[in-house]
Amino acid sequence: MDAATLCLAIALYHEARGESNKAKLAVAEVIHNRTKSSKFPNDYCSVIKQRGQFSFYRGSIKVPTKEKESWNECVKIAQNFNKSKTNYTNGALYFNHQRLGVRFNLQKKAHIGKHVFF
Image 1 (cartoon, helix red, strand yellow):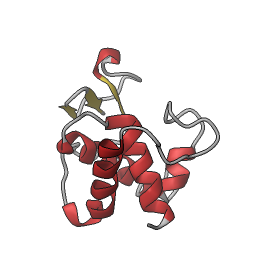
Image 2 (spheres, one colour):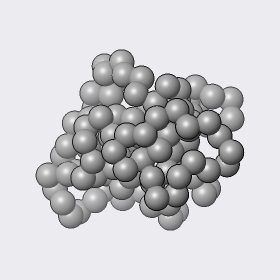
Image 3 (cartoon, rainbow, N blue to C red):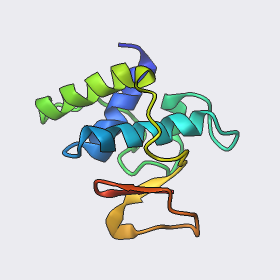
C-alpha cells in the first residue's frame, strides 16, 4: 500500500469508523478536495498532518491495531477511492461531528451520518 492510501485509510478509520461507506467516502472527499485547493498541501498525508486539522493526529500516523474489521473496511475504501467518482459533499473542505454543528461561519454543504460538511 502506498503512503497516500495508508494515510487516507488511517484518517477514515479515526474519523468515520462505525459510519456508513457513504460517510467514509465523504470524509475521503474532503481530504481529496483539500489537495486540490491552494489553501492546503497537495497530498493526502500532508493534509492530514497539518497542525490542528484532524483531532486524531498527534505527531505520527500509526496503523490501528484494534477493530480489525473496521480497519480493513477503511483500507478497502481508501484503495478504491480514486475510482469512486462521488461528490457527496458538494466540494466541502471541512467537516466536523454533528454535535458541533456548522463552524467558522461557513455554508453547510451536506450532513452525512454523524458529520456536517461545509
